[in-house]
Structure formats: structure tokens, C-alpha cells
Length: 98
Image 1: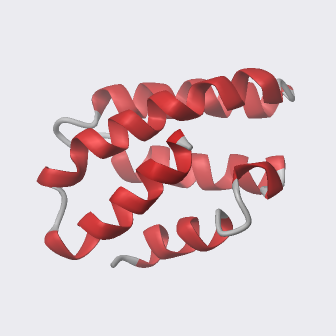
Image 2: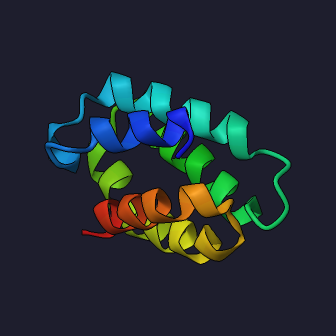
Image 3: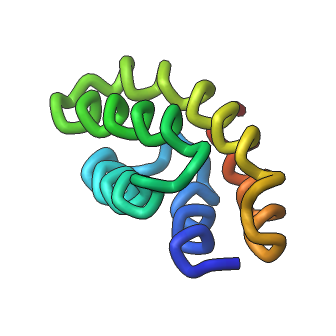
């Protein structure tokens, strides 16, 4: 599993509500940069940009409302991801949706 995915899963171990908003904004920015230009990830990239905006403006309610959609998009990309990242992406999708 790639390091960025491992770090994201570690940050979510205590649950979404325990993640510091400024730390979350940094993670979201990193993922946005990583996935920009990846074929099939356009919707996810757009959603990450929307999440970044919500976090930057301090609208945590809006940010929280975006997470299930991010989870569904993450889950949709599992099958086209490298095999070593698929389990981690499934875990991430579940955490975002749950």
C-alpha cells in the first residue's frame, strides 16, 4: 500500500470526527494533487476541491455532508487501482461512508 494511503488511514483510525480540520485540509490538498489528471478520477477530484473549500471556510457541516459521496467515488475506483492499494482504498471508502 502506498505511503499516502497508509497515512490517510492512520489519520482516520479514531474516526472521522476525531480528525483535526486543518490536518484534514492538508490531506485533502495532497490527494487532490495526487489524483489530478488520473483517468477516471475526475469526479473524485472535483469532490475533493469542494471538500477543500468547505474545510477552508470552516463549514464542517458541509464538509461532513460531502464524505459519503467521496467514499462512493473512492469505492468506484478500487478495481482500477494498483492491486497493492485496493484493500486500503476499500477501507478508506468505508471510513468515509460510515
